[in-house]
Length: 259
Image (tube, rainbow, N blue to C red; front, side, top):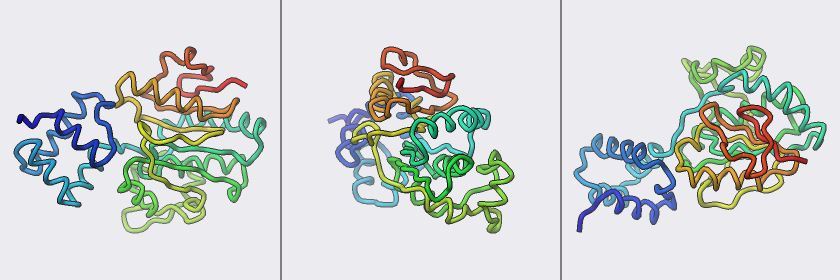
């Protein structure tokens, strides 16, 4: 039997419920081949055997194939638009008990950014962010809440002073912010989606999916939103068929489920 990439995909699906067929093959295969080479392992069959028996290598694999590039207030101009245009509409439509989902939340930068941004519109003790990711390792990092200077570079100065404490070269986010975020493991390509969301944030993750998987995820996000709710996507993404799904477009990165 030839142990090719198809074999690896099938075994990974059995072990993790992660369907690599939903990711762009050339990019994902290159990432995995690099990791196999780094570990000095010869062949997909031997690598699968290692993944089944070595927890450290398994965790490394999950962390490596799930794309974890994040930072606070990434693309500040888009957060400014949300602050000035989107949040006021949401509060006017739904009141201050908003249901907000940060999907593919990575190391927590975006859900914590959401808490700070929303605190200008809603008392902080009324804010609750439901944050999900496929990768338990990055969510563990999120719960610790330690970040380097580059990660927090775009945080408004008022929030840096109020909510971050320097610990050596790192910056620790306050428990007041952390307490407003609830983390859960979730696979966008397999698991059930939350319902009746007022705002969904999912940025710079869908770009790695196939066109078919993108369409499915954007449709599921639409179904998850309440009428009048918003989806906030990344600066590298766009929903080409947004009208067919039913979205209205506020600008290039904010899509609304019409009232």
